[in-house]
Length: 227
Length: 287
Picture 1 (cartoon, helix red, strand yellow):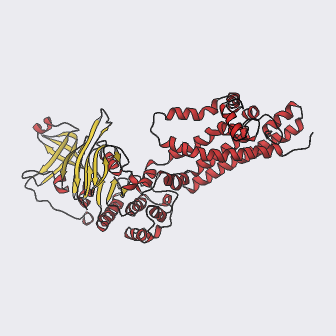
Picture 2 (cartoon, helix red, strand yellow):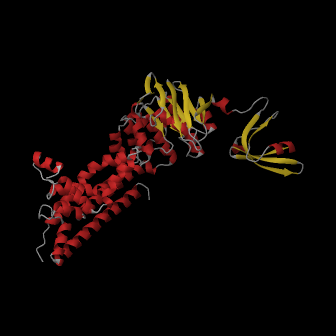
Picture 3 (cartoon, helix red, strand yellow):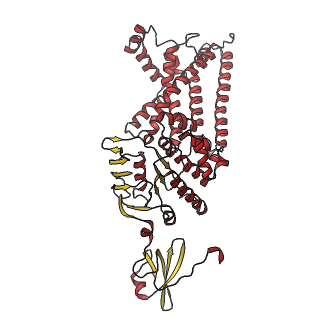
């Protein structure tokens, strides 16, 4: 049994934190737009947003590799002008994770916004507020359980991803070797002891995170007199 | 004060119809909108608020709210809107709901005082009763000192005693703030108490524009009393027929002769009137 290294866990957490932060900022305007728009394009956008849920991670990973590799227009642009590589490093992992976890952030937020009374939003407009003021001061504070769910599920989903990360990041220690990839390698090298410890930690952390979400939501509903 | 000339195609239960309204509202007027559900009342209210689009023109005090290719956003119209479901901001206390509209704490306390809500200013909306919620919504609607107040069946979900209390509050606030008010309502008593003018809408058109008394008083000729009701049943009793008629919340028996009994049928809307009849009137509690 090798000495236990915490680096893969630290890397998983860092990746999940960065991804969650980026997606939170990106998903709010999109979820808000989806919940209020009347355009016929809505089902197309919704289908596009949800695509990562049904696609095999290998398909997503393959296209991300293809789009971001140094031979692609995007990859070569970043390499030439910004001196940044987009695959087989942490930046690549963040991009891949953001694409992969996108629906897990958008969907809870969207259904949260949709569950708000239409008249509450209209009351804010009539009160002289802009869409941005309404979003920040009325809509978001009234969908706290949805925000909590979106953030935690996105975070947990990113910690738990494997296929996309492996394809786009490989397994470079201290750069792209996150916990899930590390466990895969241990099993491959038949280091079952360490694999057990790592896996048990993953199960424990995941359970505690999910338990936290459900406890928070139950408390919130009780406080608001919903259930 | 407000000149309205708008049209919009609405989806009806069987086929589409046009909401087409052309009216002028005077300053400080209290207008009741009545009509069957689906006739376009709420849509008209929402068009005035800018919450729904329409063709045509709305001009308020010389300022265009709606013209071809332009619709002023609701937030710039300076209106008050009272929703049927109160639409309070659940994340804010009663006082914060008011201050959200306009950060004028003196005005907020004055409004809460006028509606006897001062003691509840720190409460969260979810802990209030329906009547209390609607009083908060009413106060909130006046926080911007609106020139135009729009109310969509504001009291329909409340019990009679609370309704009566709120009608009083509405009238007080309407007078105090010199607003022009448009209220959707079905209740003749409420309309009579509050409104100066009743507009009846049917299938998107205004079919009657009158004062409440003219609108609701259905007597004609020498009739002293006249009520509209629904014929529920015709029962033969000895040589006469008895018609059972529902008038408002009451059921009455009317004697019919055989000729009347044969021309009327159950389900008809009928008018029950009486001539040369000196009624006695009592307070409900004295009997």
